[in-house]
Image (cartoon, rainbow, N blue to C red; front, side, top):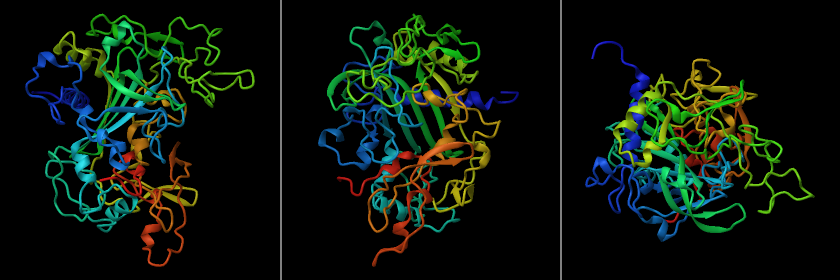
Length: 499
């Protein structure tokens, strides 16, 4: 082919290739596509069938004691309002930007589910470091090779014969295609709604904020796919949404445009939105007054909602007005239209669109040990970058494009002020588990730490105290001093996981 190659289009195509592979019907009891399922059946799943990624291990199963049922393939979908983790929230109903939730126009909550592919599971299970389901094993892995070495230490697999274990010994994990983590956003659906056929759906055991557990049908509204591979050692970041989530919204003119009217948009596209009411009346919306992307405050203590003694709390059932204020990457529309033209007209995936793909412009050198590296000065403390992180990846560089999924970064989109940013911007602060001095338990206290012009919830830096007798000085180092290849899941390891 003559002429320049549009790298963004190449990345968009790669993102859709991953989406198709991961959403293919999985072979029974396996985590790979079923070769007997033809392309004409893509996105037309029989009852009880799972996609490839739905067969992956939920991250809580990697670090928490789990029941035999949770070890099934595919594991049952269990969505809980309160995360099982005691550190940074990566599941439950809270978004990554803080203790805030998202409620659909059907008055139901959005729940989050994080999964890891077999390559990452194999790395966590490696015997050379522990396995990596405890804080002490993670710390040992970080320090297995001195800082500055080119192999070993804490390095998520990139695949394609590029990997080592914690000690620097060449190793292959899973099928050698690199680490994949997925974060899914699920909306509890209302029975009988004709729009339900437009979603990838699942049966889930849902536990609400008040501890009530019910069996519900949930619909996939958002999907993050992050992958570590050669040339993208800081991950390839892709994000998709269901097209009915919300309109594209202009904060200046207060006008909404329907993304489903674009060329090549899905068939039968003019339905209501899941998170936006075009006829919203501020006089009747007593909680949010129809303000787009208004962030909730303190939740009401009971499911009954507001009372005369507490008229300012925010009911979990109050529907929210959501608009896409972070523009779709303009080339994605063309790629989306082409994909829609290739998949079956009755596939649920004709109702999903790629929002954007991000990857590092400066991917080398590969991520080494998580030991202290050069970073940003915050007061008297140096906040470390991963060894391949460079400052111009941060949002305060005007050349870095903001990326956001409206179901997962609802309140930190473009136009939300200094809180906007990129995927790598946030995940650069992801650390390993923290050790309380003299023990093997997690640090529970969080602080808001400023990096550049953004704030992150991380375990606080602390001076290293004198270690107890018989304890290595390294065993008293808190999480904040170490980084974990951009993955938040490692900061949630327990003292001991059930084998």
